[in-house]
Each structure stands twice: as structure tokens, then as C-alpha cells.
Amino acid sequence: MPTTGLLGRFTLHTQYGTLKVSGRDLLQIRVGEIRAIKALQKNSKVKVFATAAKDAALRPINAAKQVIENPEKTLEGIPAGVERFLHGAYRQAKKTTLNVVDTISDYTEEKPETTNTEKKKQASDEQPSDNSNIVEKVATKAGDTAKDFFGYNKARRELAKQLEIDPYTTNPILSQKLDETAWAMFAGGMTFKMIAPIPDAVSYTTKVSDLVWDLPPADLEEVNEKKLQTMGVEGRPARELFRNKYFSLTLTTALVAALDQLIGVTGRDKVITLATTAASEEEARYLIGSTQIFTYYHRMITPIIQVKVVGTIVGQNQDGNIVLPLYVDYLAWTQRIAKFAEQHDLQTKERSLWVSGKFSPLAQRELTALGWTTREEVHATEQEKQR
Image (tube, rainbow, N blue to C red; front, side, top):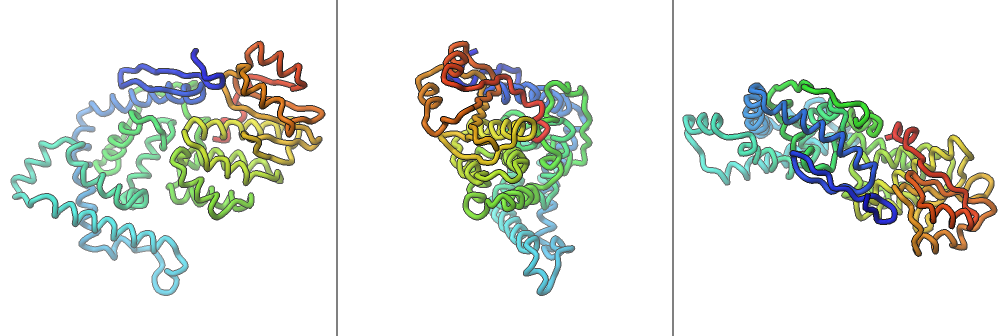
């Protein structure tokens, strides 16, 4: 297995395409997703799906047309009068309505009118991907709120829950299949049925909390925001975390949930500040995994009283000793690791280094000689339940 001295590098060759994967954690997820892709692929070949998919391509247009003709109808159930100024949902719903109206108007101006006969022929001949241009434009213009307005996001999350996968997956192949099937489900009236079960060993059940499946994006972000506020994290750091493209809603929720378990521990805001600098999904997952090792240590070994950032996140337990969690596959003894292990601010009477993977024999010997107590294969059995 090729590594960077920390994480394994994998190339996953599948009948659906080739995927580059960094780390065992993500590899297991991607393997599980292959089964989900296969299930979605089989379902797409069913005749009922093809019919539903064609309907799905046209129904969003009809739904948007209804918004144009009667926009007030879309705001029913939202408080009116002075009360609406205290209800953010009204402003967001109105903004979404206007965005959809603008998008549909722009789109209809771009395309010449066709006769009824031509429309019928076009509706029967075109494939879902051809007809979905307007849907894509609406989604891009109005964002996730528009998708929630039409009910698409809910259908997509329900589908992901049935498949036991991450609805915000960064797997481009699976994401596309999810989109196609979700449109057919919500707009075409299709019911998805599993043709082949997803094996429990590679499912995403233990990696995604029910919140990610059950809550709309805006609601889930609000839940995370409130948890961050109780930790003393609000304002710019929180906003920058939500804006970081490498922290999907799933990964953000996992990080916040892990930090939320470190009740009374100071310095959690520093973890969030570090997270906002993540420049890849690999870095985001590393920070989450390392934080989850913290929560396990905090609950099962010795309470941690403080978290600080010394390049990576480091904890100090109630005895004043350093705890260093590293969410890596394989820790090789390199010049960089040697220099880090000898840092002055990591010098305490006792110090522990826990890794999710393994140490190289040389790294194990050298760290022990430097006074580190090491523990490897800190499996995410306990941690994954938090995701």
C-alpha cells in the first residue's frame, strides 16, 4: 500500500469509473458506495423508472410555472403582518420565490415557443438529462432553499437513508446517480425499491447521524450553529466553517458532534479555527477523526481539560499530561515526525500518542525512547456512532 508516511493512497477501479481515494476511512466509504451505485443503476433500467424520469424532467417546470402564476400561494403557512419580521423563513421563502420566478423567466426567453404538437413530441422523445436544464438552472439560481421548496432535497435524503449512504457524498459518480433517481422519485412519482441489499459491513449507517438524513440543510446548519454557540464559537469562525467547501454538511456535523461531547473542555474554538483552514477533504476528515479520538479518550480514559493547536490539535488531560491524537493510516518515522515529537511545548511528565492506524517499527521504537506512550489501531468503533 503506497502511503505519504501518514495516509494510504488507493486507486479504486470500478465498472462505473475510477476513483482516487486517500485514507482507509474514505476507502471503506467508497467501497460501500459502489454497492449503492449498483443498486441505483439497476433501478434506472426498470421501465417504470424511465417513465417516471421523463415526468420528472417536466414536473419541476410545471411547479415553477405555478410559482410564477401564484407566488403568494407558496408563502402560505408563513406568518404575515408584523410577525413576519421576526420569522426568517418568510424572508427566505420570498427570496426563493423571486429567484425561481427570475430563473424561469430568463429560461423561457432563451427558448422559442413551440406548438402543442411539438411540445408533446419533445416531452416524449427527450431524455431526462436533456430536459433537466431548467431544473439545474433553478437549483443554481435559488440554491438549496429552492430545492427544499420543491421537495427535491427531502427526496434525495430519503433515498440516501434507504441506501445508508451520505446524502452529501463527494463521490461524483454516486452523486450523479443520486440526483437522477431523486428527481424521478420526487417529481416523477417513482418509488425506489432496493434490488440488492447493501451489506452492513460496508454501509454508511455508523458514519452518518440521523440528523443528516432527516433535517433539511438549513435546519441542520442551525443545529450545528447552536451547538457551536454553546462552545463559545460564533460569528466569523462559525461562518467560515460553514463556507469551507471541503466540509460538507455531513463532515461539519461530525466535527461539531465530536466537539460537543467535550463538555467543559476549553479551546474547542481553536479546533474550529483550524478547521476553517482545511484545504482538502483529506484534511477535513483528519481533523474530525483526530477530534473523535479525543472524545473517546475523554470519556473512557482520563478527562481532557484543554485543547490547543500545535500545528495539529493536542489535548491536556486533568493530570496535566499531553494527549496527541493522529487520525492516520500509518505513522512512519520521518524527519518531520521526529522534530514534532521533540517539540518543547509537548514535553510533559507523561504523554500519549494515539493513532487510528499503525506505527512503523522504527517509529514505535523512537517514540518510546522519547518517552511517548503509544497506542495504535484506535478503531472508530466508538467514534463512528457519533457521525
